[in-house]
Amino acid sequence: MNKKLILQLSLFGLVMAFGTVYFIPSNIEPVCWLVIFIVCAYLIAKNCTEKYFLNGFCVSLMNCVWITAAHLLLFTTYIDKHAEEAAMMATSPLHNHPRIMMAVTGPIIGVISGLVLGLFTLIASKIVKK
Image (cartoon, rainbow, N blue to C red):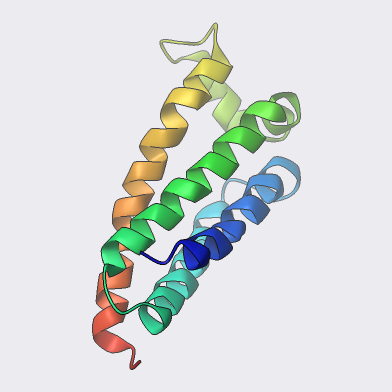
């Protein structure tokens, strides 16, 4: 596992964490993540010699830490700019505790996106020449 590369690539997650709080709308966010996943998959495939899936998975887990932390710390600003998410939280089982809801769903989304990025990196490892 390439810990240095994982940390460096997770900085995309740090940028997205603050970007989604302040200026990236929910409808644009998936496109940003797709571009980030493609870039990360390429860089992992180019710079690693083994454990491609694990490296991609770990990048997404680190991204999850950055994003969940930023959204929890900047909760009021995030909710003010994301009305759809606020409406979803209002109808959730933890509607009285939206920060707990974020703290629970953040890691779940991190694992799911980790599986996706891991798959992207496996595919990229078959395509990219070292």
